Image 1: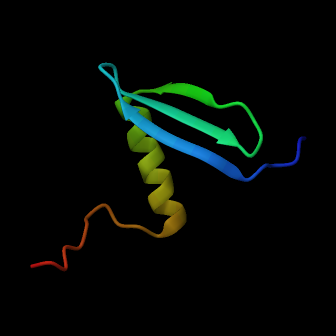
Image 2: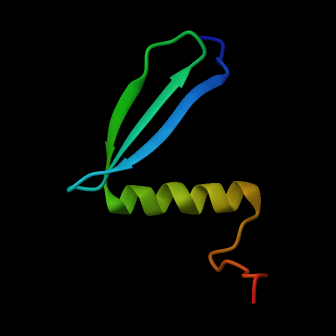
Length: 62
């Protein structure tokens, strides 16, 4: 297994079909992936699980 590289690029763009995710490691070529809305929801859920996030946002500006 190859050694992981530091993340150098991470971008999301909205498309007509869903989203375009582009990532690249340091010194590597970018990889663009088509992401469906359901897959985006799964990514968000996974990030919330890892980071201990909450589905509801606290708005302290009230």
